[in-house]
Length: 314
Image 1 (cartoon, one colour):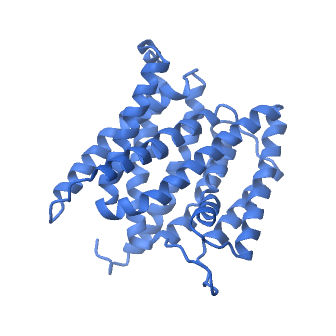
Image 2 (cartoon, one colour):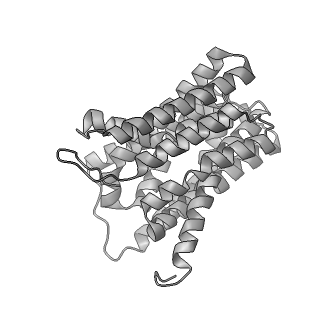
């Protein structure tokens, strides 16, 4: 569809919001699968095995569609791809799956939504990115909101230890994914987002399968059909489809607007958790979520740079 079409931008907005909601529903499917006593690495293996063929096909299609042949990958590029694949799609995903054994789907999704604050902190620590006053206030609001949601989960579960462990695991996942996003930018610009995703997914899938073979016997795959249905749903509906929807939305409306519409994700997880998982919603949880959403929105806005402030690219 041509960019001059009156539907060009509305479709981009729809894809951004829908993609965020589909991504967020992943936590719901993981929680549902856990009711059948499947362990995190086995269910993660199902997700990777079912989604990998689509990413490989997309990578092949993207390479064939190039007008000029792609330059061969250097040894450094291959090492970076392996490292980023292990960090972003293997380790970050694995600890996220484990975290959902201890905390609610809504809290886990909200912690992952802190990604812009983590990115800002990493940029400040390692790339001389100064944090301005408005951003400090926004981050304080975000983490105050998370504290309120933590109190909600602790009250429901009755276990400070479990809620703390799950939250730390979820934050570790968000931190690793933030590093993945930061350090993958240059490589994506050089080889393209679709081939990069196909390569990274291949690396992570191999790592997950090896992890499964070391940790579990093959008999662990003897699971109820419902678990396989959830695995296929998570691979196609919560991974493959939203990846391409968000990519297309980014092309149509730009990363800033995609980021703003990403706030539909935590809200959708909260509602789906209530409707599907029967998770309880409290005033403190809603207040905490609003604090996080507002804080992330302010951080996502690109301020005018005062003298001495290094602006980062979106």
